[in-house]
Image (tube, rainbow, N blue to C red; front, side):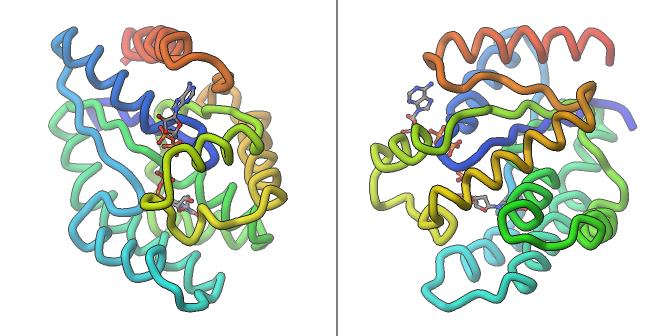
Length: 209
Ligand code: ADP
Ligand code: TYD
């Protein structure tokens, strides 16, 4: 594999999408070729899957949710991420497999071994080279989401504070287990301060690629 695969993670409202755009602008100014993508919904099929279960008023079975995120990911890996990496591009994804460990594992309570197997099948073993976790307390994230407005709400945005506390713990457990790949960034700061640290970490990482 050439290129580098970088993922952004965080609970909803942590500010990761804002940071992803700022990072991409900086990297592109520096002449780097980046592919920006996201999960769920990085491919046309993925966008249909995302709509079907995130933008629905139906009661979605947790196992169905787990498998639909996996289906979205399988398509994303094979159709978009792997070809871009093979072409030597930097792929930056707004969420990837760690979101399943945090949301479906820690948040919904699925067994972590089952989660690992589902992720392994969906990704065919593809792991990010670097993951940035934008860490914020759930109360502040919920305030930010409220500010973002009603129109962007999906089913997950309507979860309880307790759910987001568990998801955050899930992410912090990954950070403890994989400190080399998984970097924690304090997201309770200004957009510019966070963007500066993000760019520093990514620039350092790209030197080693
Ligand atoms: P996410 O992609 O993690 O859900 P967004 O980047 O969409 O988060 O940000 C959620 C909301 O918070 C948006 O309205 C955004 O403008 C705002 N926001 C992002 N970063 C910050 C920050 N550092 N401080 C205050 N508000 C922020
Ligand atoms: P979306 O609006 O696409 O993303 P964001 O809030 O990051 O802008 O919402 C996606 C939701 O799906 C978000 O709440 C996180 C959740 N999710 C999972 O529960 N498991 C997963 O594997 C992924 C990729 C996302």
